[in-house]
Length: 454
Image 1: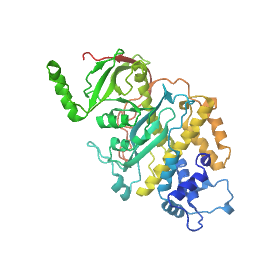
Image 2: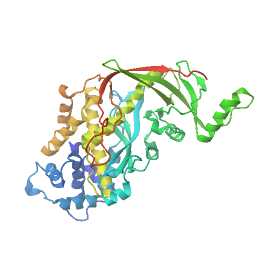
Image 3: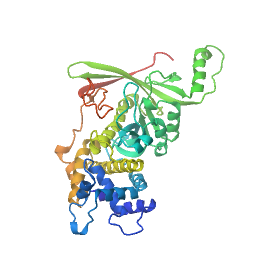
Image 4: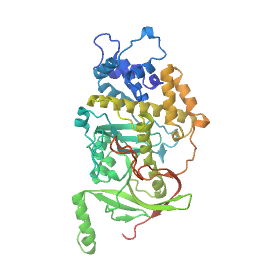
């Protein structure tokens, strides 16, 4: 299964491109080490020797090397991170097709970006490079962290692109590196963390459309009301925003002309979300979205408000990457900066390969990829690796599409309160009250609202 999506020819190509080809015959050639690093991601709870045993379980011991843990560690060091970076570069990208249900909305491919953090081993090199997370009300975290920002295809949860770096970087500078991956025909979803003129301007300049939530305090003047209750507005930089505020207060009452502005014309969609639980209790919140889709007839506001919930697919993707694949509360094992980069790139590569396999199975069966289980896919891939099963793709498709392994076609809407799922210190074992959330089945109602005055 592993060589089906990461074929030896591709591995040899990236090894040569990175200049890691052997100058002499080794018991652990670079191609084998690449597969060993990928297998480490499938068996995160195992040491080097146990990962090697899983990788070579069906091969006769007389024809294989029996390396020590130190030899495998030295082989990883010789390989470096560049071959894995080139390998992920070859495999990343949107994998859904027009025949894949749930990937497109009115001809637009749904994508989302967001950031997250992963813990790495507590070594001097990692602390100096990646830094620790520190909050004002708590002591520093026990582990240094690496910040990851990814662009995800919502319908398949595949990685269009991803970048990572030290924890102190904010999300927007990393997201800026993802802009070349955006293209016309995409609809980008984002939360309030990217609410800024530069981010909106640069994302829209790629040709992709945006559907972003904005903060309640942002000034969104009504430039022109639209018949569906939405309106057009101007999002400006700071200097133009001050000019626009003064003009709105004084310019419209007199002969003062409209000031020159550096602005982006967007459409504002305001709505109210009511979540009603089974016991009759409900909770109401309000939200505002801005989008470059300006035509209310071609792109109805009610559909866009409901569509914004697809942004949560990137959170589900991060859960699959950090919990299902890496393991809950597990720290990346590498104690050097290059080792962390190599390990994280391998983690992204294995995740992308699994999502690609799942998407192809769903497309063939004509069902939504959301109904397939990443846990089942990874379990099957691990078994095909240990048993050296060459019918891996067929076996994986059969297992994923079994009726008992499919999620319901229509899932119930659920809500989960924000909470601290894991304390920052690895030594604080006692959970505080309210630190562990729980999911509740709810009925979600979206009601459009409009501004009161121009």
